[in-house]
Image (cartoon, rainbow, N blue to C red; front, side, top):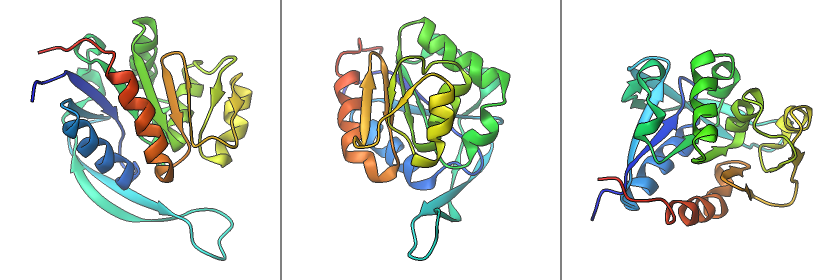
Length: 191
């Protein structure tokens, strides 16, 4: 299979384990090379978020560990066809990292696709990329989406607006990745 280009995956410690592994495998399957960027090049401690009866919110358990390929400081957006921002708790602190915001804004400025799932949308809000846009995300970050000028979409598992695709949670993978793959089919191949 031809190499269709590098795709940047942004996460860090407490990134959602299933969202990360699913992304890596799905992108490889489609012929892309996923590159995981984090605050530092290291072994990341991922988490699993799930929903349990009797709890008012999700629960968190330790998840798989995965190696990041590069640090955010080493990212050159020109080397990637698109960016995917993973959910979990990682976006809670990554949205305060100036380099993360700079990277995401670069993808927007270069008119490249930006994909964000679950709490990953918090980074799009911090980067001021949600103005007048429909957004699917985890229901408890609705306030942040609306405060950033976006419109929370309650009934759709995934939403696309121009070059930004957002998804609610890992339970939204079928709808989210259907949209992601449709976007990536239109990207020029980089070999």
